[in-house]
Image 1 (tube, rainbow, N blue to C red):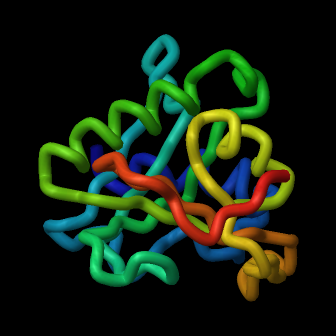
Image 2 (image 1 turned 180 degrees about the horizontal axis):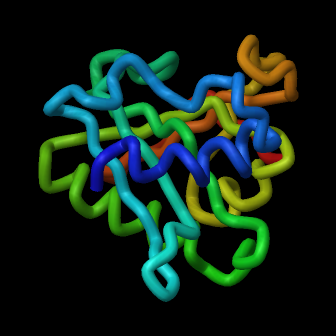
Length: 152
């Protein structure tokens, strides 16, 4: 999927439908970026974009950063987010990724923690883009004991 096909959902869900707020990442069109979507009757109802990126934890791991995870309001809680993320993680593993990470909105932290992600203690911050509370999260893709975790 192309990034521009996800912009409408990104804007509506992540930027409160403000037309002047950016929903583009400079890496969107790079060959190494991956974009996933969940469709319902041909409509994009879930999105997740992944970018190769050094991580704030386990910096020696091959890591991808999750950005612009969005689930349309009318289908939240129906499993679209889990399917999109797990599908992406399978493909990322096949590409050699060892870890994924994100700056997760605190309002979505429950979803991430319930699906195997870990929060980094002391990483809470306000997003410079949205001024909303976020926490850095990660998930190892190759097994092993996680480090620097906290429970929420």
